[in-house]
Length: 111
Image (tube, rainbow, N blue to C red; front, side, top):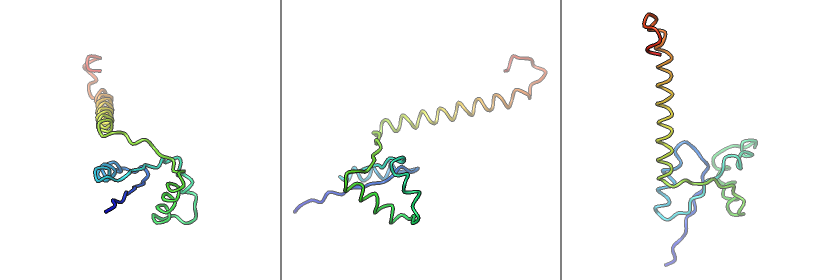
């Protein structure tokens, strides 16, 4: 019995990586379309998921799909930690700036 190879093509969205990881574990070839390469899709008159899927399949079939790099899970986890740290630092800075006017009589000790 011949095993069929499944190919999955998507473009970057908010939560693309868990689908890509699950399909890769099942043996599918995962391709991630680069957003700038598929930007002309937004200028079409007919815009729907069915048409987008057909166009992505055509580009992949012709070998002209602009692919983005799919980071390994360890790198994605590190990036998520850095993003979270950046948010916490921004929150700390925001709270520091907002609380400074609350202490007018204490001088510059708490700035």
